[in-house]
Amino acid sequence: MNSSAKADSTHIDIAIDRVAKIYAQAIVDAADAAGCRREVLAELGTLAREVLPKVPHAAEVFASPKVAPEEKSRIIDRLAAGRMQPTTTNSLHVLARHGRLGILEQVVAAAERLADDRDGRSEATFTTAVPLDAAEQQRIAAETEKALAATLTPRFVVDPSIIGGLVVRVGDTIYDQSVATGLARLGGLLQARNIHAIQNREYSWHN
Image (cartoon, rainbow, N blue to C red):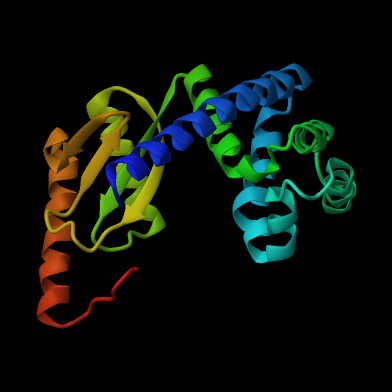
């Protein structure tokens, strides 16, 4: 990719991010006023990340500028069908009317970040070389909150290239397992597990 293409891509991403934040704020404000923020964000998140990826035609229609907003609204009504909060349905109709359903996932992510900010929470990404079970995830999140004196919304990512066991990212700051004794202990265990997996060919490749 040449430099001009990279610049164009960056410009587009920044533009989408800005637009997503505008709609995210409107959605969170409306949900807060209705007292249903958690439900609305959960419903939008499920639609964007679980439902639409399994219904390619609907996803394509939502993203297409050639499909009239009225048709998109009819699809929204069929998807909602009394199963969603009115604020969720109204948010989708607003996005449809302004031709922004194609960035629904970005809007949801921005709304979740805004909600965390208002609740005094920070998003934390935990990267490990191997998957962790629920108990390990809960433990590592609790250890990190204690070490950083922060309230976190954890997200776990698997990256086989992480040999050191554990990397934690909170905002723009990256920590290794040295941030707390408990994390260091868990990081050591994860590293030992990685070595055992390599020695015994117990690995899988992730594209």
